[in-house]
Length: 112
Image 1 (cartoon, rainbow, N blue to C red):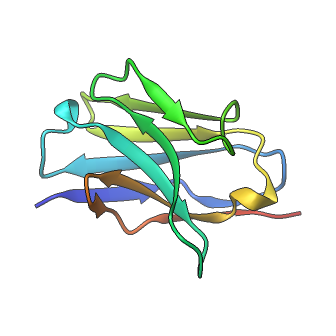
Image 2: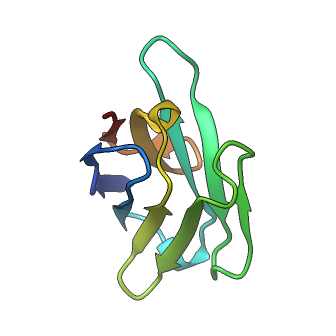
C-alpha cells in the first residue's frame, strides 16, 4: 500500500521560508518520479514541482520558479520542498504525489 506522509507546514510571514518533507513507503521510491502539488480550498489542484527518480532533473511551475527547490533522499525514502520568499498566494495545503496517490497534506499559511 502506497503511503505518503507530509510534514513541515506551518505559519510564516511573507518572505519567510519553510521546508516540507514527505516520507514515502509501499513502493520503490528510488525508481519513482515524485511531485508536489498544492490546493486552496474551493480551487483546483495546482502542480508545483516534479523531480525524477534520481534527482537529476527538476521542474517547477511558473509561480514558484526561483523560490522553491525540490529534492529527494532516496536512502531515506523522503521527498523535500524548500520554500523561500514565501508569499500570501503560496498559502495552501501541500501534497506530495506518486502517480494518483497523495498524502494527507500539510498546511502552509503565509500571512503578516
